[in-house]
Length: 191
Ligand code: URA
Image 1: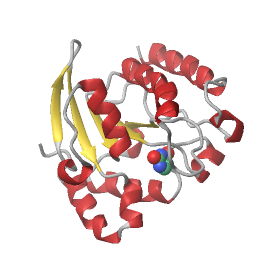
Image 2: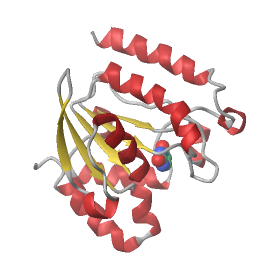
Image 3: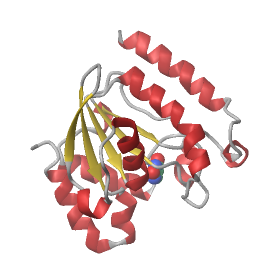
């Protein structure tokens, strides 16, 4: 079972490595497909790779990743038990993704969700949560109003929990948010 899921993810990863659907492939070093157990129960979704992620080909290894590691510790979740990926798989130089790029890249994420079939998805930041709200049909007003909330959504195959979180980088840009983000993560598994 895990072997089959790994093979499916490996194939999908190759498709991402060969992807030329948008111009971002020209400026990336390594696409950042995602990492974690193929049968992870929890999936984290960020926006897209930054400078360090692009060099290493791994998600959340720069400063936002260090803060994310701390947040995972606070919620007593091991990083190696969750699957971590992004909306966009190639380096975003300005840390901004156009609607067009998101539209072209998210079929890869849809497929990752289908293969891994997580019970719980944590959206990191507004762009990830907007994607989730369209996919699972819930109303997303704003990250300021909804951060920390966990919604239970029934799909044809299972009930999925979706948690809305600030992007960890928001806590680095705005130190007054740090404590709020940490409190959200401490409460994460106590719903
Ligand atoms: N920010 C993201 O959204 N994703 C990463 O992988 C790193 C930083």
